Length: 459
Ligand code: URP
Ligand code: ZN
Ligand code: ZN
Image (tube, rainbow, N blue to C red; front, side, top):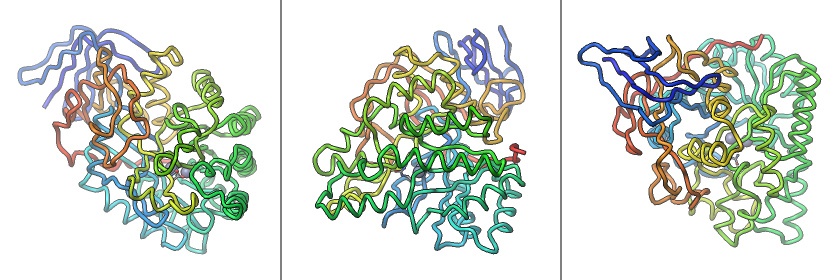
């Protein structure tokens, strides 16, 4: 089966030109102007529209046992929501806790996804403890095609690692050429501040941010970069939320430490006043690191445009209203997370490109290409080129809509970005040459997604 996308404006991280894309089977075989197609080819008219490489979300949670409950999406609902929003590949955090066996956890996560995803996917493998058998298990997981680890400096006694375990993980990653992604907060300070606030009767969601202030994230970020520096590994700070943490990470970059920086959609668009809303409305906006003071928005947008921030993910992590109510008595019990896998591309395009904060090539770079390069997926993913997978988004810039839980495909009863206008959405989304989405509707094969096996690249 062949597919010809005709007459669109093709936009990659480096270029922008009017042309056609021809996909044979699963792979792009020609890119150019005035391409013809053999009989039987499916031809899609993209005139007046943009044609992007499929977008990559480098940070999502689909299957996630966490905070006494489970995140709501299945691989089926999460991947369909991703595709409707233009994301053709996601990287899921595989998160066994420190009470689980890592290899068994990895097999469990794989089994949850296999045959149930509509888009392609891979995993960052979490290292949540470091025992005698950890190195052997991680080597096996890397041999199976996983080229990135994840560590949490927060979530003490569950996902969190101590400094010794962080060192061991980074030292092994350096030997294996694997990049280590890290949630950077000081776990000890978080638990002390939480206890102190609760002791003062400060139990509502508005106290979540004060329990994990900017300095606590900056300390975690600085410490992580120091460990990366002293092991020679490659590190990636996930969901960076604020100016002081950015300063710590960019200072490390400036002295040559191999650090990349991710921020996530909520930190560009939402601020701590959302979590200060009364009752469960506030709880719906509790995530970690927390939504911050609004003055950070400009800092993050500028850093993104200037190249200091490398990627934009979502940290998609859906808990519904009833689950959020687990934290009614104490903010420390609110399941942390905000969904967003469906909305990232449209909101980044609208609030970034349309509002003049990001140029179009940089938009493609931060939402697709850079993640592909960092995580061993490029040039298979993240660009439109001969030999790349036929993952394409024909983008309708004339579309006008509003983000709403009423119309979303994510499996949740609220949307953290409710009511935000979008000026553009995917008209067509393909995965390896097959049309999966048309005009906001999933029309494809719900089992098309494959595990992307990757080679380490960070030697
Ligand atoms: O609040 C968040 N971010 N929930 C998901 C787990 C994590 O820290 O990424
Ligand atoms: Zn995290
Ligand atoms: Zn996360």
